Image (tube, chains in turn cyan, yellow):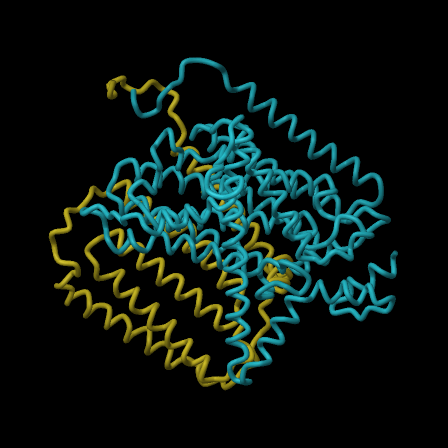
Length: 412
Length: 180
């Protein structure tokens, strides 16, 4: 089994064993080979352009259909958690509901308030969707299947994520609506606050791999000891980092329980009140694509990317593993959305700055200790460090909050 | 990304990025609506990031977007939001009488341009482009420039503590006159 795994994990490796390994390798690289064949059909000058266009079209097609699938999964899943059916009218078991939603969004009237800032109002959904799709470009979806292989790929990802905050502001400001502006300011404050634990918890994985490139980070997690893979999530700092990263990712994409800026029962719809029809659908699309992008990054940093969870399962193609893990994380987000109540704004902010940031910093310290300590000691030291700081922080912060009449800072 | 491209492609890219940066900079100066100025400024900063990326300085380019567009531009926008009321927008779209400012800017440009043109660096000839990977930046930061790194950390900590102190709830009682 070991030589089987090693023949597959060589980049573009030649299968030495039986014909079965060759078939599996072909299945693994089938999309890469298809793209190379399509590019070779074009004249030589246009080939880089055609190659880029094919990759971009593939990413948009795959992730937009994943968006459609996720909307129906989410509504059915939430429905079952809340003891009701989800949508079940449109197709068999409601499976054609995304088509109905898309048609509805396309045919609704596009209402723009007269006093709204027309240019900003128009541009805000675009500024949300384009960076969200850009962020998908550096994720390795399978073996040799990242659209671009940048040396500073992770920095590109975070930079592009930071550009989405401007779109939130543009949407909130241009609508000339008090609730919209309030929702936008809350959303920006939340996104900026949770960006810090997001990046800091990703720093541990970067430290251990020694590179900002997602391909190299996945390569650093590619070993197997027996059947157990060397993913980052199976180390103490990796597990804590993964949990912090997922919580920060949920907050970055305004997912429940962090969806106060867009809470439907609190502030009507937050910063996209004044959007209707297709622009609203674009906001929705941008948020979900952002969620896919950070989930994909969590998979790359902590869950070993496109590697299989056991060394005897390496024959299943790499992109299937990536999308299986992605669907698992999406299911986790849907589950959390259906279960937990929404956090209030001050709870949200204090959670970010008083709990997540110290946990992320302790995690970096634990990762550093892990690197330089040998053997079983590092397991014991890192686990006690991470678990101990978690317990101390949680107990310490809970001791300060008392159930009393709430004091308002500005209203009295 | 652009490493293998011929010189004409680089020139076209440079011209496009330069025009974008300059025009959004001019728009940031000349518009009356302050929010539009701030957003034009963020386009200028993104154009600068594109220029850095064209020079193959990946870390600086992406850090420019992450920090300037992602944090500084939002800071500017928040400052505008919290301190200005809504302007009715009945005035003209562009500021029209900036002749004195234009003259001063021209004089400043002449001074800086003269200093650059007459410097020794321009006449040095072609030097080999340095490799500016993140690894080398990290190495240099940890060995040769470690003192500025520590001073920067100290500065950021002081700024953070200062921000917390400014925003902290005062312990003495505020006058109870709020809206009820």
